[in-house]
Length: 287
Image (cartoon, rainbow, N blue to C red; front, side):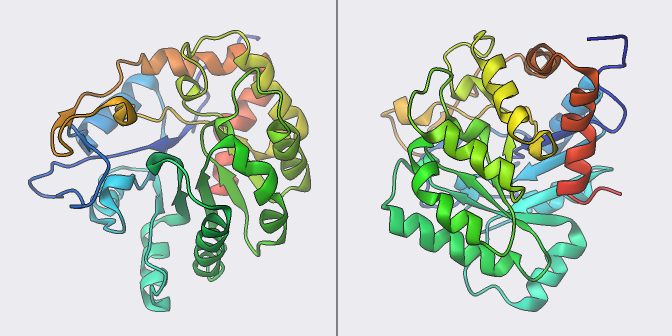
């Protein structure tokens, strides 16, 4: 790495969540867990401390299709885009209004709830893509690494781009065909990968094997890689066997440390600029 400023101007955190206050934005009754509040004010503070000028808010599972908290937060931040979750029958007028407010993608979240039959995942992707097509949004996928290879044919045939959360959940030492399948999708130019939340693919976010994985994905197509903090680092709810309405603590992650991994992984100022600034500007339509 050279002497370039880090993070570079207009750097974007492409994956964060805002939660609550729950007195104003109550969680969905049917949810897997209850996190603490993580307000837009706290998010703005984190972005300011890290020097990140742009941000993408992603709808979390515990708000289901109620995007009110996400949309409210987007109005309170100077440069924000959103990835929503919508019901299948959402009207064209509603899609137009969401686009005007900065929504640029729809999320299909399978991993939070565990697993789902492949045909169910395919149906959810196709339904989301149909809504995305009106404004050229992308379908954002949070699925197990084992699903990547069997989903590849449908993703290649989609009328819109797809984005995989969190390295596609591919572990650094994964010997399956998931990495090869994801590299092939990247090379095709319609799929993106967010190299976010390294702690979701290894117990140690600083695991030295993650750098080669990040570079392998960049090598497949450096124009289709973005990054995010995954703030506020939602709880390990699948390990919790308490009451569903009991508030669980966030993971104690060093958010600045997560950002500082990026130049260590990529080892190239121009590539860091591309991943943190240029690629997000294109994917999320920042002007």
